[in-house]
Image (cartoon, rainbow, N blue to C red; front, side, top):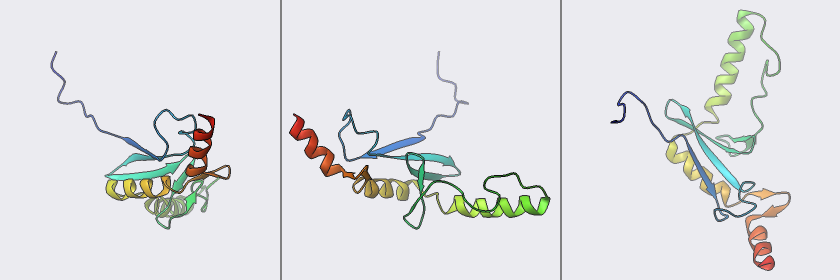
Amino acid sequence: MPPDPAVRVCAARFTASRLPEGHPDAVAFTISVEYQGGERWSVSHGLLMLGGDGKWSPGYEGPFGWYEPETEADRAAYEAAFGAWRDAHLFTLADALDLAREHAAKLVVNGLTVADVLARTEEDA
């Protein structure tokens, strides 16, 4: 049966890591680039998202971040603030991949750098 041309297929996730595929610590030292729609991509490490300012964010922390806005004015304020936060944390694919490569090279997890993990792996071999 030929493929259905109405079915949309797209790449939605890339990963970047300085550790080799299959390394036991690779998951902890991997940056993800994920499609968010509208030709925009996020860069994340675990639950943290990278912002345009180069800082990792645990998520939106602005007005009404933890409770439902009650009025239309509150809803509008929330949507504007969340939209601005989201825009500051989304990139073009090219920029997202560049940022993922850059940050994968300098990740520190539990006080260990990629170089530390690779050296430890060589010692264990």
